[in-house]
Image: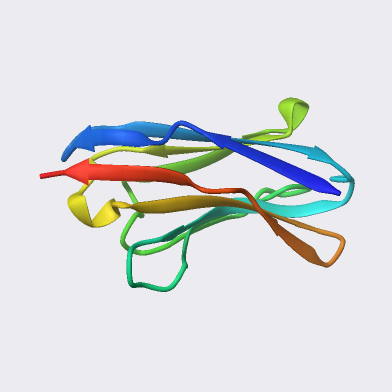
Length: 117
């Protein structure tokens, strides 16, 4: 079993910043990738950013967040972070942490991010 615990969501004004954290535990040996997706009301879940877990690190960002969001991981803590700067109202969504390990994908419970104009 894999457990993901997210934290750091909240309400912020446009132009502000938030930092999301996601701590992974359980059977996470062999993790290939960790990352963040988001889902706004009435929309499909979409990629925000991912980061590979071993070897040469590779980053993948969705175009709407590139140059504003930064993903990072702390291997010692099995934690992935999402630093979100210059937030916009259209960034409002539930943000989900994900981990890809041994051919399966696991999701966190989601954390709400609300950006007011």
